Image 1: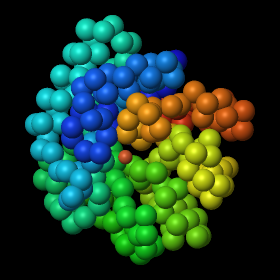
Image 2 (image 1 turned 90 degrees about the horizontal axis):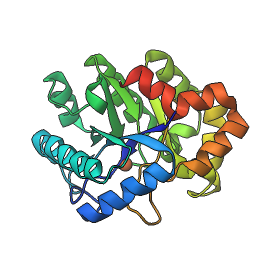
Image 3 (image 1 turned 90 degrees about the vertical axis):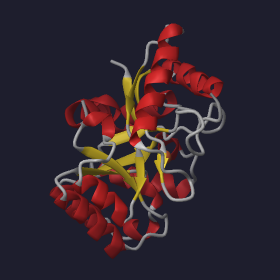
Image 4 (image 1 turned 135 degrees about the vertical axis):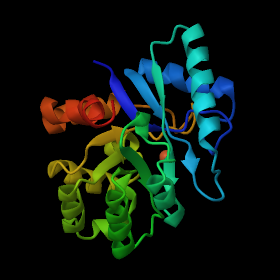
Length: 236
Ligand SMILES: [Fe+2]
């Protein structure tokens, strides 16, 4: 079974991710070598980083999938978006105009790393209120939220899903991130481990090393869920 990467910036020239079609293809080649067989393209939707309209995202995914196919790369690409949370995102959801993860009822949302606890909680509750299910991107980044993970436990019970980055699992984002991820995994608060890949260099779609570590530390049942099972369950 191949891994499913639910968070990646593989579309060319849309945000701070892939800089060209060639770089997108190079990222896809790396992903295949790393054992990934399905990627959800999640360009930023954030004032200042780009807010591409839905049609452009769909078109670009189609184009990239076609090029990957021509190269016989054994990888599937689906549409998504990483929304920087703001009021406008709630409006998009209420009007069913948001780009969800693979067309599911789940939407990937990120926050400012300094987000305070009340804002974080209210935002995620408001998203649930629209009938969509929020997937919180790289939850290990939000220091104030992590000060007391009872908040994450409560939100999790309400139906909020959490994603962590593969780089944080292996320690490439520093000791604190690795430690925080470890405790979130211990409590099984995380649904998805994703690459959040931005390039074919330092932030390439690396997964193999992370997968090895997870299978060793978290066991096969939970690791299978983190790397593909939950994606199949919630998104496909
Ligand atoms: Fe991202």
